[in-house]
Image (cartoon, rainbow, N blue to C red; front, side):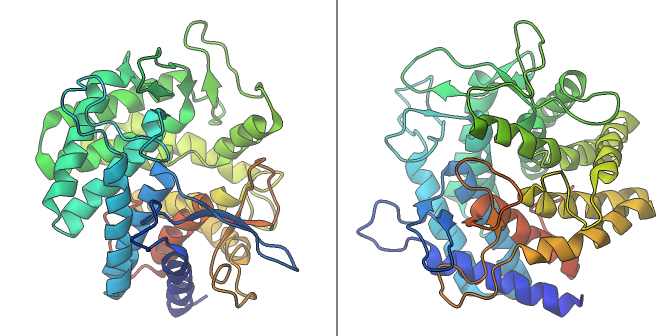
Length: 386
């Protein structure tokens, strides 16, 4: 497929985000994107809207689209998304325990996952750096201070934090393996070595806690016993969520590659290689990853395999990426003309049932926008990269 075709696809997806973003000044959702919408042959369902992290990760991808195209509507979209993220951040300095935290969904939400809040702060950081928005940059730094003071125990982050004072939920989740990328970017922007230390500490703990000898990963671990909780959970949706993270590692591999490039310590590159080599053994003839296929991984793994191929020069990663492209592109809705659907990417629905084409969702979509731009390979980007 030509680079022009990748760019055309990327623009179509970015336009879907713009067309469906809430922009009304009288709507408290202003700045949020469509998080999920059901698409059936006879109708398109009512959308729900993005949370802190999906708003943030989409804003980062939209900044990439703006850098590639120069289209002002993409920059405006990212700026509007960051305005919503600002409304979620606790900026009352009298609340010392909460000051700088970023709520999960709305300004009234009483809890959040630090990983999700970090993704929102990551968007503020990128908006600050790329759009020269000093307030966004300052807010990203304030969040980092909150995270360092409140969300780390034994160098690994918490699962859930409660603003009302309830005990922090310290269950160990593999999804925090991608969190160092925020701290590495912040370190690059500020030259404050504390953030490099935080990021490397998370990488070290992730490697110790989650990676198995064959390269695969445990998804959830009980902190008090060290017991592997992968394959255990309260309902089908939670188990489906765990299956997703077996193949969509929340950019842990990117963080490990970045750690390697920052330190030249082979242990980080070796860990990323072990995981991606395991992934390659799971790739299907269609190019999809997982059985059933995990749609979001089709996008996230293109991003990771691209960088791994560049860093190592090993052909197996580039070849696996090439095999995955046709399946990845098949997830984009290009037949429906309705602006509520046209250009979006199919992912999981609320039950985390995989290998279905029923719900357009932003988890897959924001990763897909970054993946399309990296496949085109015309620019270097700050977002979604090792």
